[in-house]
Length: 257
Image (cartoon, rainbow, N blue to C red):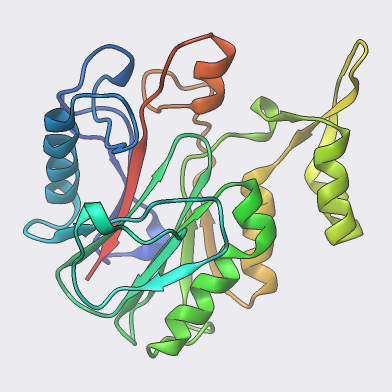
């Protein structure tokens, strides 16, 4: 099975790809392109999958990743670093050729950025906490610090859990509306759950797109792919949890120069 590399028109010929779960060597719950170092999968299989993913997007590049913690923190990468010393952050930017910036997801939104004229790229892991905290804003600022300009930056939001699949409770919606009352528009009524109050459906992708637009990004592409419902194509933390599965894999999104 070949690796499933999903590309965004907005990013043009900048080397990039939102990868799914196809084309690797892992088995069982991790079948097949699991790249999650934090999973209980065979480390040798993970290493091979990460190599295959990198070669599918930017052959010969060195993959650089993070210890993702659902923060708004970004890291500027000027040289490769070992997986054993991955910074605790949720976004990377670089202007150095040969580095493949990698973000892992399993329902959260991967966001890839590029300013072609400046030769600057970025990648962000936008779960609800990081998105609300401003991880995309942090990425844009870090890109500008090494020569990009937000008027030229294009961004693409990759596969993530869709509104129809993302049920949340009262406390969740309150966090967003306390930050900005206008955030209510990203929620639709969900089903009422006995003894648990009303629930809502959250549109993570639309929220991330809105944050990018407010930040001044003029061209934004949202791929509209739901990780939860497409079992054959994507890993999903929430799907695995709802099914009572013991673990889950992670997919990767990559961009580089």
